[in-house]
Each structure stands twice: as structure tokens, then as C-alpha cells.
Length: 328
Ligand SMILES: NC(=O)c1ccc[n+]([C@@H]2O[C@H](COP(=O)([O-])OP(=O)(O)OC[C@H]3O[C@@H](n4cnc5c(N)ncnc54)[C@H](OP(=O)(O)O)[C@@H]3O)[C@@H](O)[C@H]2O)c1
Image (cartoon, rainbow, N blue to C red; front, top):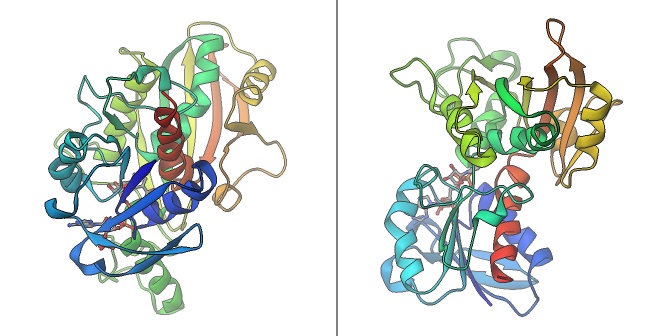
């Protein structure tokens, strides 16, 4: 099997490399792509050093699978070219997530939307991915009608430059003031919470908030799901957390909600300790906690979800999909 990893030098790409060692046969051949800046960089997979190639037409050849994590513009320009060379493309960017003919897949929830004719598969955004992992078993049990998610998004969700900026701001200690304007975000992020994640749109919501709306509906196949999202960026390196209030058609119970979650692959319920982003970092499973029945209705559940945005939120899900299509 031949696998191309596009964006191999990035936060997500490097996780994909690590996971590929575990998920794919040892005789798999790999090609790493990144920008001209990284051309010639050495990266190691299965103890073999590989030279990173520049992502240009001349370097594209036949692959079985191409995993894209290099931003939407690269996906738009190059995904179809890899498909023409015979590859399945699994794309981590938002470029194709809304296309009707492109499945938006969370492995464990809706991989059956992929068939042998599907060549392009979109990986959902990292915050939605963690939340839908918790919502799916609850929806199967109680029939989901509406959600109000409030997300605390980690800095690594914005890529390498954002992580470097957080490290620098942390090193500044007490010299970091509220008017610091040289960081990745418009406001300081270390020791701080910025009450918007992503870019604000004309409707007053951010693009990250609208991903909750559009992607949850598509993944869970609930076209009329009501979604009222609010997303903040917090001074956490890795691990997106979300408090969610969910309304169901049927009456709920805390106990059966926890059982449903614990019976679902890829997710687990923790009472003690309460799971934080630090607990989620490096962990494949999505963690759920603070399950409470609603105060105003027997049809409401309120809970906390936290997951590693680079693993199930990106690289792990992409590699799980790649493994699945390699066996179709
Ligand atoms: N971070 C997350 O939690 C997360 C979650 C889900 C989806 N995603 C998506 O995954 C993608 C990568 O995110 P990331 O966090 O890994 O970002 P990152 O750390 O900034 O890495 C970006 C990668 O894209 C490559 N790249 C940039 N411009 C390129 C060009 N012109 N040609 C070829 N390669 C180019 C970079 O190569 P160089 O090193 O050579 O610049 C690097 O390998 C983005 O589309 C992002 O939206 C990220």
C-alpha cells in the first residue's frame, strides 16, 4: 500500500505519521509532502528517514490513500489531482465538508456513508468531532432534538504558529499584559480566555460556531437539529472541552445516559477525577463527565466532553477512515 501524507510537518501531519506506524502494515510505503519551506526536511516513520517533498504537480504519482492536513487551499488545489492518480483522499480541512456528495465521516458513527465509489472523504472539525461522539449514543437512546454547546477550544487547534505563540506568551510571565498584540491571536491567549474562536461572520457567529451547526447535522443525519453554539479560545495547549445542554424527544435518565456512553466505542465516562484537557491530551478516547438531568425538563441532559483535538479531532479519525477504506 502507498500512502501520501500532505502537511506531514504540521501538528496534525506528525500525529498521522505516528499513528500510521500503528495502523498500517509495516511494508506500507509513505511519501511526505509539505510547503517549499520544508522541502528536504527529514522525518522518520517505522525507523526509516524520509525526505519531505514539496507539494507540486510534478511530485504527484499513484497512491492508494492521500491524507491531507495542509489547509483548505491546498486541498482545493490538489485533492482532485491525487484522486485522478487513483487515491482515496481523506481531507482534514473544511474545503469539502458541505459538499452533498462528500461524506463527512466520524469513524464509529457514520463510516457506512463511504462506499467503494467514494474517493473524497471529509474529516469533521475537531470540536464537533468530540461532541458528536458523546451525542451519538445519547441520540440513539433518547432521540436528539436540540443542543446548546459552549466550547473551550485549545490553541493547537489553530496549528503550529499558535502553539509557538502560546509558549512565548507563557515565557513572558508577568510581562504579558492585556495590550500585548504580537501573538497569534488578536489578544493574549496565555492565562486568558478570548470569547470567540475562529472568524466572526456576518450573522455574528464565528465560523467555528457554524461548524457545530452544519457538521453536527450532517454527521448525525438530523437535518433539523437545533444548535445554539458559543465557542471561546482558551490558553490551553491541547484538548478541546465543551459543555453541552441537549434536549431530547424522550425522557432521559442520567444512569442510562452514562451506560450508553460507556457502551459506545471510543468514548468513556469519568466521575472522578473530572477530566480536563490535560487528561485528554495523548488519549484516543473522548472523555465525558458531569452528566446531569435538566433542572427544567425531564428531557434535558447537561454534560462536559473533552478530547484531544489532534487525535480523535483530526489525525486519529483520519487514520481510522484510511484503514477502513483500505479494507473496502
Ligand atoms: N490542529 C487541529 O486540531 C486540527 C484539527 C482538525 C483539522 N485541522 C486541519 O488540518 C490542517 C493542518 O492543521 P495543523 O494544525 O497541522 O497546522 P500546522 O501545524 O500549521 O501545519 C500546516 C501544514 O500544512 C503545510 N502547508 C502549509 N502551506 C503549504 C503549502 N503551500 N504547500 C504544501 N503544504 C503546506 C505545512 O507545511 P510547512 O511546515 O512546510 O509550512 C504543514 O505541514 C488544517 O487544514 C486544519 O484546519 C487541524
